Amino acid sequence: MVPYVGARVSRTDYINWIDNNRKRHMPDTGKPVGLILGTDINITDKMWLNVETGFFDAKSLALSLNARF
Image (cartoon, rainbow, N blue to C red; front, side, top):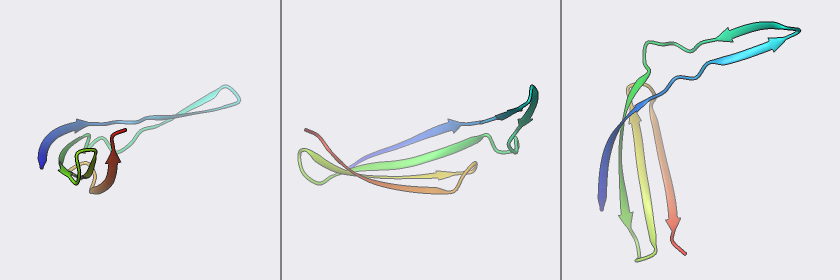
């Protein structure tokens, strides 16, 4: 197992142009910083499972099965 922790800063603005009129859509700026926790779990020498979760700015869970060629 290879555990890891990290910080994430994210913000995305969406700018919509219609007939030379610009409208900027900004997200809720109250939570731009998050925490990421995860681990890589070795299954074989060339295959591993990744589990990652996020907190504070988003509530997320990601799983992936990875292979090295």
